[in-house]
Image 1 (cartoon, rainbow, N blue to C red):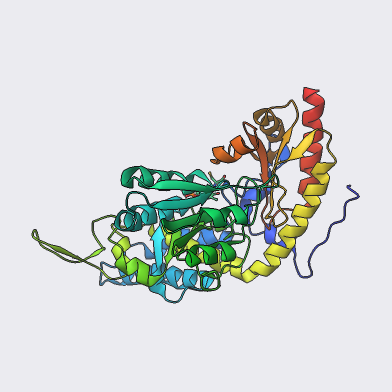
Image 2 (image 1 turned 120 degrees about the vertical axis):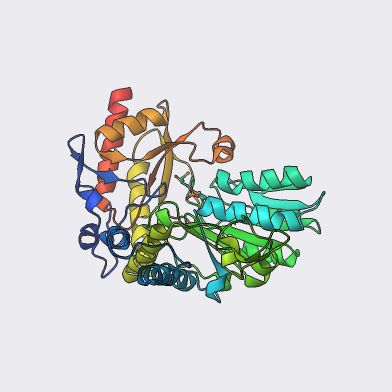
Length: 415
Ligand code: C6P
């Protein structure tokens, strides 16, 4: 057993929590599964699986369309998630919450709908050096289409954004600042309240990509004063194919629909269509109903544990894991921000991350290797890829010991 200190916040019982995640109880290649890839997708507790099954077995019907009992029930359950998301993000009204497929669609919706109406040739969109491709490409596409310019906030060697450089990028042509709350490749927690404030001072709007923040910390969009905030259901222990885009209602009301079709209209004739009010204006077609209901169960689950407790426990895991990995000769952690979420990205001199991932997998340890959909981050650090261990509140200190032991084995094999 490691001599590193394990601090478990009072009242946090990880073994009881693990009972809620059936997937964690299996062996992989004859070894107990150590799941350290929650940043890619988090595992789902019983409560989420049960809610999805219940919908299909008992309440299955399309929503907003039927007077019959099943449709009433499925509509109520789906809309209940919108109310839960409002509370989760501390939005002002339910109408500010749009169901989307995930963070990627949330950002594309804003870039496409808001962007087309508001970005003109010569305008500028500011993003940062540590963005996921989902918060780069939609803005790049918009800039190409509108002949606008993409400007990038640089970072330092720790993976922290340089706010003094950001200040210099802001100007009368800045229309939007879009940054992630937490970097998926580095773990950096960005000072988003300050970033939003600076954007507003320059007369620009601000969108926050909350994909990696929502599972780990309390979010208050009113306190942040974010104009848009988006996250994915599958990273907050809910299903894939569902997520939330928050937008201030004043902005959403002024934006044209993103897609046309059923459920987003008030009236349709061949001459003219009028659109539904918020939030339905942005929700064309039959949505992922089961996913929406599963997301509601996931938000309930996370709230029951408590995001403050989750953040405190995961911080201890991060401290412990950082120390454990730092003892491995030749290992370099990529992303050492002072404010950091439970992500450990690293390289080991002379060993390709894919080889590391493969050897770890043979020991039952699941990590992600590659560029993590953040190629500019890899370029900045002059590495082709990293190995990334990403944690959630169901991980244990013993699992981090297993990771460290697994990496020793990697070193033995490749030395
Ligand atoms: N990052 C990872 O392994 P979607 O795919 O739409 O649910 O989320 C996209 C996304 C956007 N922003 C950030 C900061 C993200 O981390 C992700 C997803 C996963 O890091 C899969 S690439």
